[in-house]
Image (cartoon, rainbow, N blue to C red; front, side, top):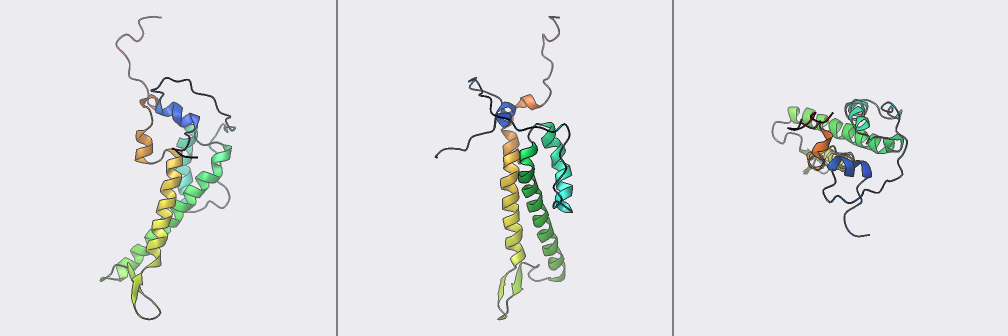
Length: 160
């Protein structure tokens, strides 16, 4: 299938409907009354990230029972990225010349630190998952102003 991927109904509603075409309802998964708990394997930095973004996604109607695995993948990618970045920072503090970006291989030659690749891959995964939930600045810029309270109009309140 070519073209852009379909956009979920909830995101289309948040972005607005400039074409004014009728929005077809989609089957909607059940939404818990409260933000769901993270799965048991989401711990440490991943759990912190879950509780940072999960309640807001739930409030917007973007976190349902079937979205738990995707949010868990985002959170674990965040944890991996953060741990790799912290390890690189510790190495950089001990290495004044290359700041941990290069390491010596078994044959004595310099090569790229594997943590650099791990951090880059985790960041790319994290950004891909974040885009699914509208967590990136670009994704948020596509949301409609209707998410925020509407400012009062000149004639609001005149008619009963």
